[in-house]
Image (cartoon, rainbow, N blue to C red; front, side, top):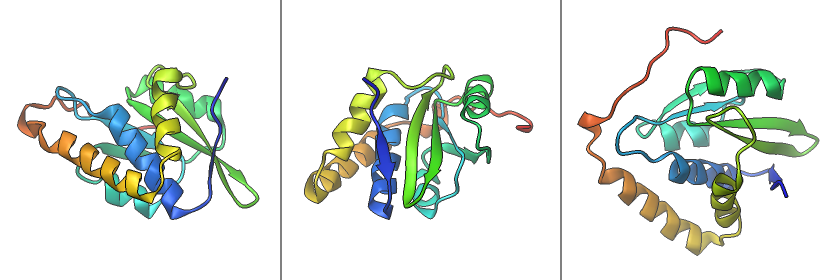
Length: 144
């Protein structure tokens, strides 16, 4: 069964960003994340940890294609609702994320504030252990 995530508050965006960071952590390649909305929570959390880019499109298929073609580790596609957003997590292969990824998101969305703070510390500690000088960086000229 596919998980459904309704995003309404900055705390929800915080949970999305930390679940994403947990999934994309790599000791060899600088991680890449694509989103179709701009949010200051993402900019703050991803600024030094990942190559975070935007592709403003309302079509999920076009978005998923960009995730795959431009080698993003994950895509965060948001569909506008009346009072928030519905989140679709796209894995690097361009398809809806499988249970390995959705289990991370399910876990984070079930956390209370204390558990979330502990989780955030664990994620930051995981990134601090990475030797950033040795990470491979993938760059593309321009997304169209």
